[in-house]
Amino acid sequence: MSELVYVDTNVWLDYIYDRKDNLRPLGAFAFELLRKAIQCQYTIIISDWTVVEIEKHKAENELHQALQWLKQANKLLWVHSTHTLRQQARKSNHWQDELHALLAIKARASFLATRNISDFSNRHTFQVVLPEQL
Image 1 (tube, helix red, strand yellow):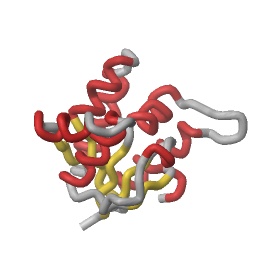
Image 2 (spheres, rainbow, N blue to C red):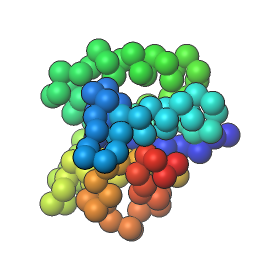
Image 3 (cartoon, rainbow, N blue to C red):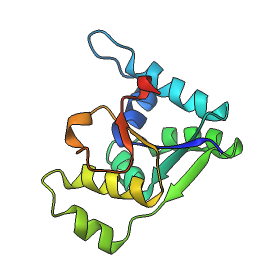
Image 4 (cartoon, one colour):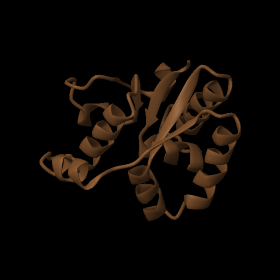
């Protein structure tokens, strides 16, 4: 079985908008992670919370296309938030990221791929990484 990777919203947005920073092709790094999943190295985890955040950026159609690609390859795993998880997350200063972390734990992720590593503590059961580190 391939390793499970929870993909944070910012990585999805890198892919959708082919974002770059001053030095790096962030969209290409995100694409490479998805490509590796298609090649059976990883299974991508997405949550209902990620979809909510993507909808705020008006990018749900682009997300849907990427999800179809992963779904066809049987490399997509959905995890859903619960009222209890949302309440638990709201106790944190970075409650949105805490909710992502709790969802990654719920899905038994090995990794959480994100651009904002510093917003995640080291107390979780998964490794927090940049997409290009996978």
